[in-house]
Image (tube, rainbow, N blue to C red; front, side, top):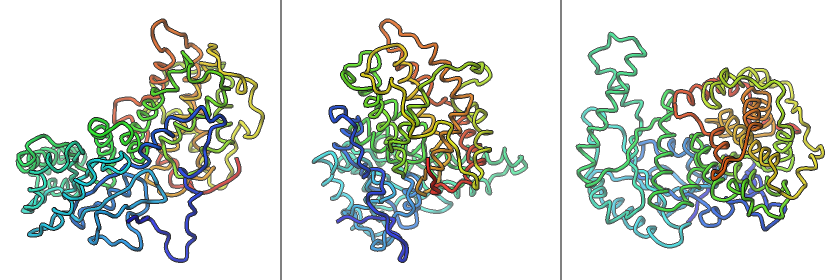
Length: 505
């Protein structure tokens, strides 16, 4: 049985299937040149996840936020009445399918046996039908509350026999409430507010780890991945950790394809999106920039077409416009002239990620965010592309530079759009896309990136093109930089911009 969740309320127009990003026809101009994501989605079209947890533990909110959907129930589905066999899907994000277990209540073994049978039935078979991961949701321990019921303890004891290699991740939910309780019970309340919060977070982490070591680890007989999460403001770094952990575990223990699709489906971790973009590029087409076996006898436009499709699909925005001919042309035109007459000093920009990216585009975003004025793109869509785009791909130095710039530019436009739309479950119209495009196109970050690409030279025995792409798009390791970037753009853009507002290119 399958249920589509996120059903439109009565009286509102139902979303049409053709409006969905994944259902938009996207065949490349030449069928012999297929996007890498096409093959991956043929093998594993959806990331299949089982979420176990009692009613009220926060499963629905967790799924909604992690996968960017409005609600995780339909008119035919009620919390507490879960049928674990039911496939819960959403038209807002077709890249995942959810199975819901009601958790293990005190003195009740039926749910445990049902979950066990279901998992055993989904351990084998076609990869698309197998279970790819399990999130076992437990409410972060409160004073006097029991962490695990007897059925949950039995489930953990039988982990190896039941799950085999299916990753099981312990998810401590409502972490903010637990931290608040720890803070209220702290003796050193004379600290400044910021210091008190930091101290409470540190102490809460230690207490939670003790609960895990004492209650969960001995039952499982092995170290299980675990993470504490909250969907409240101030804890937005917790969900990215969960999806990163899930991606890594699925990649290690299940298969490459479902791990890629899990990354495509998630909508909370832009750094992981960038890493996924790099991983897919390395599989085939980015390494072709030097050796070009995959691009032989194809035009530049055809080659860029498949690269564009792969990058956009990884970011999985709810819009068909990013795969439109008009947007593809805009991205190609952005790299037609790489020459930068007054490139900024790299020392003044520092890096391409984090706070420096904020500094480079925040002023532009602020100027563009006026909801009344249409956004004008300096490169008008529909104009004829330069003749180079219609030539057969060759290994010329200029063509390689343009391919590098295309990948770097498109990735940064996707990253900027991700931040503009973060936490919003609306359809993305052309106005929001134009906002992200102009913000990057007018920024010192783009100017500096193109200046670096102009200096590109091939290196003997090394894939210099791939090395440059990674260097220019990989986010900094510092979480603080990423958080600064997110917060600054959110302040400037999210309130005034109607994401679903549409306007011509």
